[in-house]
Amino acid sequence: MATDHARIPPPALGRFDRRGRATTALLIAALGALAPGCKPRTNTYIAPPPPDVTVAHPVRKPVTRYLEYTGTTEAFESVELRARVAGFLQEFKFKPGAAVKKDDLLFVIDPRVYEAQAKQAEADVAARQAALRLTEITLQRVTDASRASAATAQELDKAAADRDAARAQVELAKAALTTANLNVEFTQVRSPIDGRITKNLVDVGNLVGPTGAGGQATVLATVVNTRPLYVTVDVGEDDVLAVRRARMIKQPGAEPGQITPGEWRPVDLATADSTEFNIHGHIDYVDPALNPQTGTIRVRARFENEDGVLLPGVFVRVHVLLETEEQTLVPDIALLSDQSGRFAFVVNDKDTVEVRRVKIGALDGTKRVVLEGLNPADRVVINGLQRARPGVTVKPTLKEDTGPGGPAPAAGAAAPGK
Image 1 (cartoon, one colour):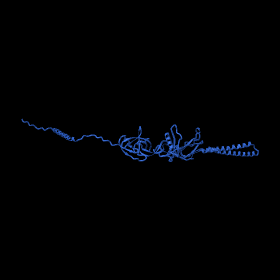
Image 2: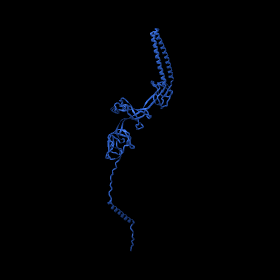
Image 3: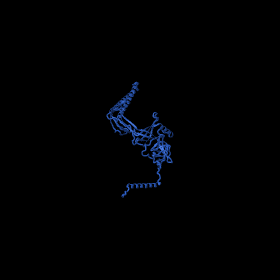
Image 4: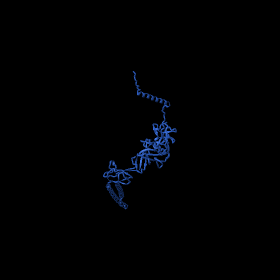
C-alpha cells in the first residue's frame, strides 16, 4: 500500500533564528574590522589660568602728620543770671532760646521797696550836708572868737571835731545812697554778654534773691556765647614731649602750642556725623603742668564757629597738625594683619606674590603712610587679595593713582582700620 507523505514546511521561527544569527555575525565582523583603527581614550590635566589681581605702585607725596584726640565742645562764655536783690519777680522780657545782646533788659524784680530806700538815702544825704554846713559856720565863729581871745582852745578843738564828724556823716550818707541806687539798678537784670539765653528758670510772681541756703542767689537763666567756641582735649605725655622737643629744636622762642612765635598750631575738627576734618581752628592755651594722675596735659583749641553749627557739649574728634613731610602711601585696604603685625602682598618681576612686612604711620584719606617696607617701584596688590597667596603666580593689572585718596576700596570692603 503506497503511502503519500505530505511535505511539512519548517516552522517560521526557525527562519528568524537563522537570520538573526547571520545579522549578529555581520555586526561582529564589522566591529572587528574597525577595531584596529581606534585609539585608547586618556585624561589630560590642564592647569587653570593665573588669578587676576589689581596692583598699584606706592605713591610719594607731602603728608601733614597729626595727633588725633577726642573731646567735647565748650562755650566761649557762659553766664548764670542771678537775682542780686530779694524781691518778687515782676516780669521777663525775652523769648527763651533767643539771641540777646549785652545790656539787654531780661528780668525785672519789683523795685518799689528799693526806690523808696533810695529816696530815703537822698534825704539823709541832704540832712547830713545841712548839719555839715552848720558845723562849718560854728567852727568859723569859734575861730574868729579865738583870735579875739573870746574863745578857749578847747572850744576851738571841739568845733573842729564837730565839723569833721559832720563831714564823715555826709560821706556815710552818700555811700548809703550809692548802695540804694545800686539795689534799684539790680532790680533790672541785664545780659552781661552777647549770646543766647536759656528758658526762664523762675516764673513771674516768685520770690527771688539771696534767699536760699547760705544766701545763694536765685538762678534766673543762663546766657551762652558760642561764637567762638572751645574744644579741650587731654594730650598724652609721649606726644607732649615729642612736640615740645621738636619745638625747642626748630623754634626755641615759640610758646607752648605755637609753631613760631605768635603763630598758633592749627587744629582741624570733625563732628560725630562726619568723617571729614573740615572745621579749622587753632590752639590757644596749654596747661603749664602735666596731670600726674592721668599722665596728660590739657590743651584748648579755639574755633570761630561763625556759622553757629557747633553747640556746647557736642562730641568731636580733632587733628592737631604737626610738620609736613614727604611720605610713601598705599591704599589702606591693601595692608593686612596677622599676629606678627602688618604686611602687604607684593607682586615681583616674575608675577609671583610675596609677603612684605611693613611699618605703618597715619591714615591720609583712604591711604596709609608706610614708614618702612615698601618703595615706589613695588607692585602692591590692592584688589583680589583673597586670590593672592604667597608663592602663587598671578595675572596683575596695574591701576594708576587717581588722586589724593588713591584708588577707592572695593565694594563691600571693610572700613580702614588703624
